[in-house]
Image: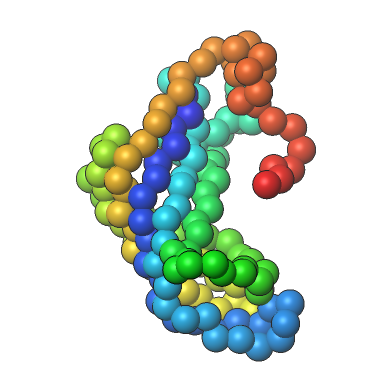
Amino acid sequence: MVTEYFGEYTVTSYNGDGVGGLYTAAATNGCFFLILEQPVGGSIGQHRARPLQAPTPNAFGDGEPNEPGTEAETFLDEGSITSLTINNLTPTTGTGNFSFTNSSDSTATGMITITGSQTITASPDARRRFGFVRSGPRTR
């Protein structure tokens, strides 16, 4: 079972050291999606690479800031989500907090609000046939 949650986020201002050197990212808000996988008999957000291995956290997400009018985006930096908590999660609601670190180990924090979701349930064979199982890195 694969569920895509979507909603809105806010992030506090933070400093970083990325592609263009030192920068300060302003506080921002926007839309996001978060994809969680739930294997048969498993917990949501947990993935088993092989049947006998212990489950590990597994999620993929992305967010885009709200942009008034015609805007251009510049890649500054990237990092890992270090914590993510969602409370009262249902198919249409949920709130939570997250933090992430960028390449200079600066930490940013934010809040999310779930506004909806979509769930796809498929057998492993159907997942392969319809492209839900990917190999290699994900690209946009």
